[in-house]
Image (cartoon, rainbow, N blue to C red; front, side, top):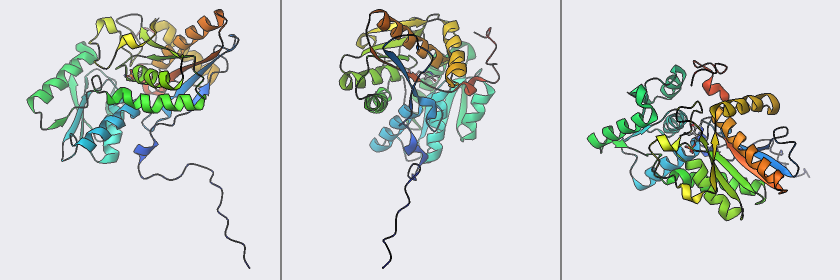
Length: 321
Ligand code: PMP
């Protein structure tokens, strides 16, 4: 008698029906050199660049789209439209392409040619706003479009949509807490819309009792930490509730840039400047803990990779902010 057929052991992930189902479950990597001099404290970085669209914004974009498909705000030929300075636009563009949804993106006309080409490569329509008004100008422009023709568009409004932080509360935070068995002493993440820091902090407070949560904010109103917002000089996002956090860490542009370079050279993590700022914030928390004789894990989030910024603003040109 023949032995029963043996199934080959699986050496990789199972096949999936849509790229959209590969959002999340990103690696959590311990930093081995940065903070190595701090006894009893470990820094871990959540590698959000490993999402299919290359950034942390895949999570909220997918969640906002799925919620709108479920309750009927999207579908029936409606076009998704939102303002974005980059990563959210890429996320909307590829997820809409994957799910067969028309997509239009409003962005300041001075965003890099590479950014425009990425969105267009996924078939998104681009609408430009005044470059001098920055991301707030793009928000005003998208609101005017939607007010003029409300039935034509679905406007997820990542700055006011609670599905944005919820994607992190039910995704990012759960993954971090599981990976570290609930042992998270402190968490720090940059503020753009505030989705990452608010949602992950909410989830961690449930799953890692005693955790202290901090937002990393650019120290200057005119800064070079793309993706992050200086709250005092910006429209404050409705989803951002500073009173829920334990504090803010002010990060000078130069420090964020220097840490992004260290991450490449010392950890093999070639990440964007907001990641540099986030890790510099995490390191400051780790130092405070070590000085107070506390032990534990400090967790932060790496939103995207450096290559998104290589052209045309040269990575090594430090005078561009
Ligand atoms: N870093 C980068 C590079 C980003 O694109 C964003 C999103 N604007 C953030 C950080 C901040 O993320 P959030 O919107 O969740 O606050």
